Image 1 (cartoon, rainbow, N blue to C red):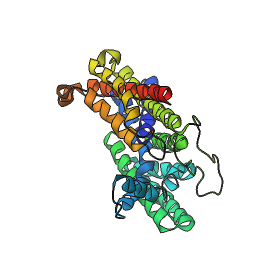
Image 2: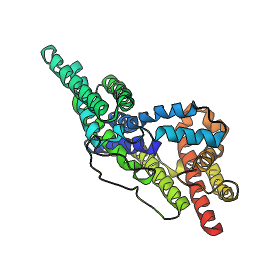
Image 3: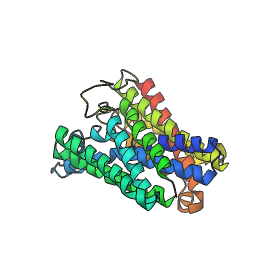
Image 4: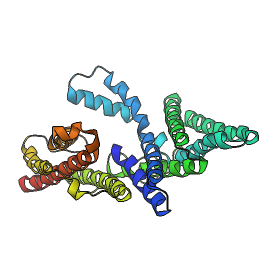
Length: 313
């Protein structure tokens, strides 16, 4: 769900802004800000780079090392609804300091500083310096998004709304894969103990999660199409049908599961690239057709693989 987190927030924010009568470009811009906030909690994956530096040899060993390192911090502090709410307030206050009158700017700066200090301090006392360092990186990423919001001339209220939408919706997208996030960290309380099981067969569960992500991506494209007045089906090039041939992959790659998913993920995404004509990819003006055609090919490939897996299995 790395891509889906941001695109879900984008689709919701842009749709709400459009329904409130915002101009198309403005609605899409607020969607982009929300989408960025929806992605930033996964900045904790930067720590997993240390897993690759552990000297693991071979692709499988490197993958295991990567995820072993990621498990130390991923879906913990940056995925907390509690921390996300406090961070959103801090981000809005940081933006307010640049828009408020000079006599109020110091007050907003104090609110932002207090929010950030509270987050870092609480995490340090609860989980130690590594988790606190991750929070610092998380906050820096959020402040970068606030800067983008400022360039787009969005005020503190929009920053607060988009930050809350992005940061608080993100953890729920992780309920289909891996360990559920620590929703109420640093409080010692559990909302969801186990991930949502889409199917007892591990491969079908993974495929189900894959289709959930595809649905979110399609929702984002539909949002853009509706706001821009573009069409989806007429934008699909015939080569997208090549995705159906991916059914043969059921004989070529190991049955994907949450533990071993990369052969399926990388190969099925490759189908989308192959299905788009080279000339179409090279023309900047055809980026919409490229995206729709590639996603159609990947969607067909996913369904073709699922059908083949059910027939062969």
